Length: 170
Image 1 (cartoon, rainbow, N blue to C red):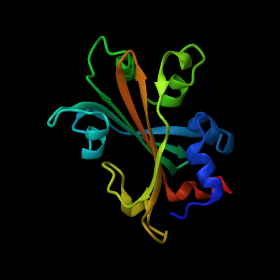
Image 2: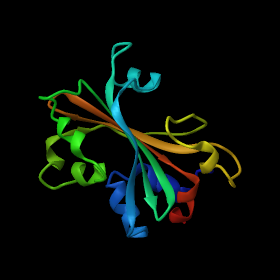
Image 3: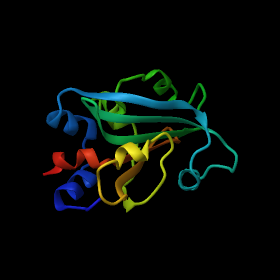
């Protein structure tokens, strides 16, 4: 995926990606690909300073406009048990994570790291790469991730911009 200036603006924008996408696509919806305790990817495990073999709550969704997936998103929450301030996200369902993270009564109760952005080839679990790249040239995907921290507990969010989303950034 070619990193254009407009795409870079989206990658580094600290506001709610869901809200920005909804301005471009009012019928934006969440499609749940997976939501369970499982092993994070090695780079996620390292980023969160997790012990090898430790599972985390992993929610994988796509933000979809009509039937076009625009963004693939992974939420990783280690130490996922009652008492963890992120535990209530287990019941999020089809509600976008951004609705919770950017709610006025919640927003000031956590800290957030800077974005780490990449344009890379990577196999993302539960993402049908054949469908994503069916008529597109190249197979690099722009992504960003950041860590939210609340009462010493982490939530790692990775958002991968899929080829179908490119027209939104022009």
